[in-house]
Image 1 (spheres, rainbow, N blue to C red):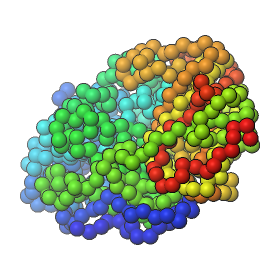
Image 2: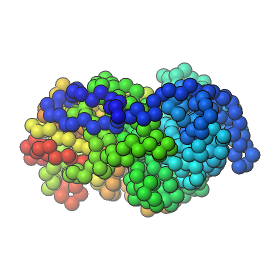
Image 3: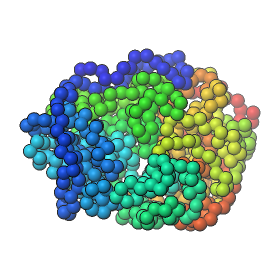
Image 4: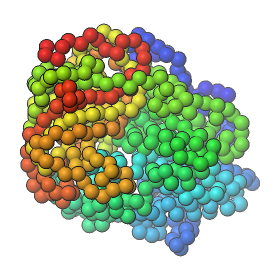
Length: 613
């Protein structure tokens, strides 16, 4: 067995002098790339309603039979040929299919039609029945193709034996197009690009809108008319997204997969991968935990999770947003996939099941580590409380982050004006692509900033993050956004993770994951408790000389579309903006804090001065 990635050495971007043993996923040479590949392009594959989907086939030359691999994509099957040929050279018959209604495949296109579930089942069984296929099928693919794998797996096609969903998003109202009720801008761009059978663009740049005009167009209300704003053809499914902004509608229920019942129906082991800066991050760990808890068979419960220092385009480069994570950030990921499928589809006893189920990359240490569970078993979830003397506005204010609980403290105020929103960090293709410097936004008075003193001992955080916020607004609705960054000795604040919530989405029993249909009501200036699970956990070593910083604002634009602060049940239909006066509480009876996943490495933080410093 050969180790695929060079892991020697330590290259630390945050300056720690402490190292840990590197434990990255490892490839093997049990199925070397020795096969000549035969291509059969633009074949028809039938599905149960008579529609014929277009597929490209890449299979090893020879009689076989060979295990099959399936990819379902709405992005043009032709673009996935090179990767398919790579897997075919290792002895796999790979079928790449255009999704229903896209490119030359038949049927009508709706990205969240439940027909994608049955199409996946039918494609798996069709592939398994080909003369050159052994009858065992796996699936792989990124982003939407990860969704397609989970949709297919919930239907339990008999020939499906293993899946590799890469950067798969979670269910739709949990992350996209709404993130805890907040519309994300990149879904507007994506919906524009995907509005018809072929990619659509009337703007320069990817996604048909990543140009100077984009931010201006985001600002035009109502959001439901974005297609008119950009000159696209009328998009009926976009209008469904806007009009059904709670989870009670059949549209969202029909395509959901993150329910106990769906996980129980999934019979196959899953190898999931994502990156710390992937906007769709929550899908992978939620699926890992869901299969561990609800999988009915030992194979289904044998889920695996890999998290690297990557954005949505995983394992492409060792540098992100100007930060170099070292050569160990890039691994032989496709080689590890081959090892995974070699075991599950070819029956090669290569020891992959003896690997720890979790592999993750700790930034700052710039090392991989392996674990038996997620979150890590040794995690000490620690409350870091917000403190101030009432003037936490901006990084020049008196906000303090400390493990000491608050006593009597004044509140903090700021004004959220949707016409002058807090600017977000730069991003590419809809995803904040690495630890960008966000110090500029922290200089604004509409951002509350709480930070530790300069650390005299390093602090390592690995795992999920939750914010407990006591807050009030003068408006009928608003958004709360909480960000964590690593403040460098030179003043840069490197973005790590964030959580957001639309105020009226605070009660999951009323609006949440496919179990309710009513938004909460707000009384102006009435404090409420908000529990905000961060969509981006982290794994980061805060070195000595650094600070932990928490920012609170009500906008982060244009990454998140602005809440107009009005009383409409659906912000996508709002036609006007209004300002709001926001209040954040942090006293003994209403202690606001972040619950941070501390890995024991020494003292939790530097000695903290009193809140009335």
